[in-house]
Length: 111
Picture (cartoon, rainbow, N blue to C red):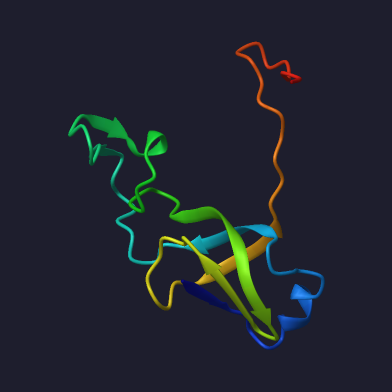
């Protein structure tokens, strides 16, 4: 369980968010090594570019996660499954948007 703490100046911006809603959370990996471009995949050990991995070490360490709101109160949003450290700076919160999957031509697949 993680808790997003919203600066009191911005707390009103969470009006309309509800428990059970999925949100996109953008946050900043401030301890990331910004000079890393290649890294070993943690499961395979094969070297890959950071843009093909979910590593925090990258030139622009903006992190993103879609999480479900468990509980919300003024200035605090409790979520499950966020992969960050205590004190990680929060950049933004947005409602999560899901699109229909597309084939390799870019056409949307309709089920």
